[in-house]
Amino acid sequence: MNVSAVAYSIIMEKLVADLKEILPFKQTTVIGDVVIVVAKEPQLLTYAVVSKIERDDSRKNEWWHVTMHFLSIPLQEVTWTLRTQQFTGQEIFTMGGEGRFIQAVDFSLEDQAAQTKLVKGRPPVQTKKGIRRIK
Image (cartoon, rainbow, N blue to C red; front, side, top):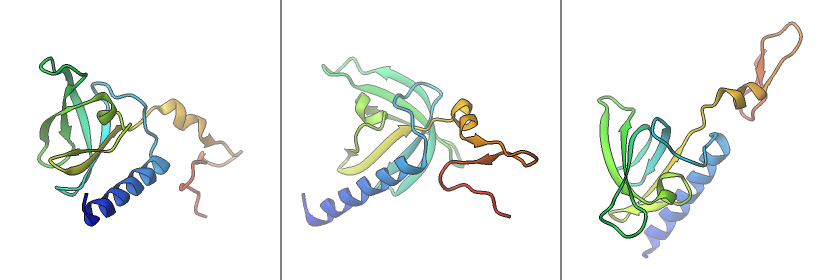
């Protein structure tokens, strides 16, 4: 690994750690989940919807064909062949020598409701770090 590859690996790890601090991620990924996709080349930080997860029977180990639709204009469909650890955010991986990260975002309303603080006579205020009421 050359110096620039090592430097980028450190940057990618830092970016993923920062994302894990500010986004509620799921531990699993299923059809219909919205995932965040981070890539070095092409430089990418976007959301996608998982539309298919199919076993790749041509390989001995567990590999999956994961079809996603990038939420961009126009919509773009991609199918990547990944291991479970790769499409569930358990590891940063490479495709064609370029870093990638994918993990499902948790949009569950129950968790968000638990983080909302009610104050008598005032609208609800999010108590999660980073969101505050401005008077």
